[in-house]
Structure formats: structure tokens, C-alpha cells
Image (cartoon, rainbow, N blue to C red; front, top):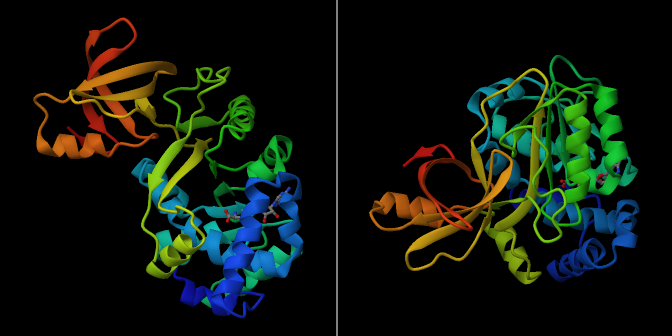
Length: 335
Ligand SMILES: C[S@@+](CC[C@H](N)C(=O)[O-])C[C@H]1O[C@@H](n2cnc3c(N)ncnc32)[C@H](O)[C@@H]1O
């Protein structure tokens, strides 16, 4: 989504680019330093429009990047489900879902802020005048939380799950240490309700990072932003290409064989090896992948691996504090 298409659909008209930049900086301060004031922007047309101009545009590419990790058969199923966008804000992920599908989709939005609801309505109707948002879910349901579970809290998120009893659920939340314990509580609740976990865990056993004070499970994506959005990111000095996130996916009607292992942290590579911390069948392991003998293509893939990558491995040697492994596949690529 480029900024030029979006600016005419904002509910607040910024007088100039510097006016918009000032509002984004004010908003960003609330998100990062003044967390007690976090909900103020939801009552303010100017800050809601600043959110829309900056965070809607830069968050939208996350959905497609996250879908690349997911099984194709599951994606085919959710494409036909009603996408229930919980804490939709300006409709960031409703739009991302529509763009990913490339055809009309069933979308319903849930949002407590009237200002955000106005903003979301104006954008959806501006971009898709012939496609109505649904007021009631139809058929299979796909409950989606985009940076909203962290604002509403565990209990409210689980209440939405009880109320809508969805077939599928996806969370794309901030990749922060502060949010991780909340995500774990939601995970425990959903496993209790009978959901299968599709991502990120190899299985439904207890999370090995549950009591860690230093590590938390989160993922990284690398996305391309539209050129005018990238320019704005540079002006406000925020990297919106290399993004940390917390992704969890669940389903009631779909189950799959999850990868054996997933990268949790990428350490700096050495002259001889790639070094990763990985979650292998819900145990944390330090993997050492020797560079010697790897093809050029394998190097290219391994050197760009990010936390969140799915792995199939072959153990070569168990060392004292690590495992020397061969990577047989990384995400959807065989090596
Ligand atoms: C950070 S915004 C995220 C908006 C959008 N999903 C996105 O990713 O860009 C969080 C949104 O969650 C909404 N929200 C917070 N608590 C909520 C609740 N209990 N029910 C519905 N929406 C809620 C807020 O009003 C806000 O619009």
C-alpha cells in the first residue's frame, strides 16, 4: 500500500509532511516510552491518522511474509473463511488479507474505538466500494489478532475466542520480551480449548522458554516497503524492513506435521560455522552448522536465515553444549 493512495482517505488532513512526521513521533513515544498513555491515540483523529499513515502501511506486508511460513493446504482453507479482524484499528490486516487473496474475501472487523472504526470504514469503502464488510461471520471462521492482543490483554483475547468459536486463529503481535508471557498464557488457554498449534512450536508440549529470564520465542521477517513509505520510515528514523514479531497460529479443524525444529535466535556466524539456538521438539538446543562442503546456494540460504525459520536436521555429532547438525531443509527449501 503506498502512501499516495492512502493520504486522501485519512480522517485528519495533515497540512504538510513535517506535520505528519511530528504526529508519528508523538505516537511512537506513546508506544515505546509512555505505555500508560497507550490508548490516548484511539480518541484522537490526528494520531489515529498518523497511525494509519505509518503503521498501517508498514505493518501490512507482515501478513504475506508470515503466510510464507504456513502450510499451503491451510492457506487454501483460510482463504474461504470469514476473516474476523479483532482490534482491527484502521483495518490494516483486513486490507492485507484482501490484497493477499487478490479476489473479494469475507471480512468482518471488531474494534472498540469509534475513531478507528470511522477511519477503517473510510479506507475500506474508498478502496473496495463494491465489497461490503460483513456484520456477521459466514461459514468457517478465521479469528485474527494484529498487534491487538497485547493491548486488550489475555482475558479479553480468550473471551473473543470463546465468543466466536473460530476454526482458525492467527496472532501477529509485537516481538517483545514483555509480550511473550502473555502469548504463552493465550497458548495454554487455546490448547486447553482443544486447538492444534500450527506455528511456531514443534508440538504442544510445554514451552522450554517459559521460565527463561533472558530468552523469548519470537520471529523476524525482512520486508520490502513501498518507496514513499520507506522514505517516511527514514525521516522518522525507524527501521520498518527488518521486523521482529510474535506469531502463533492455531486451528481446530486442521492439523499438520509441524517441523522438528525452529530457529529461535541467530548468533553471529564464525569463520567455520553458522550458530543458531533452536527449539527442537520443544527443547532448546544450540546448533552448529559447519560451512565446509556447503554449496553456494546452501550458504546463501543459511546466511540469511532468521529466527522463525523451520528446520529439518540430521545430527552429525552431539558436543558438550551444542549439537553439530546438517540442515536438510530450511523453510520450504531442501538443501
Ligand atoms: C495497535 S492497534 C492495531 C490495529 C491493527 N490491527 C494493526 O495491526 O495495525 C490495536 C487496536 O486494538 C483495539 N483494541 C484494544 N482493545 C480492544 C478490545 N478489547 N476489543 C476490540 N479492539 C480492541 C484498539 O482500539 C486498537 O485499534
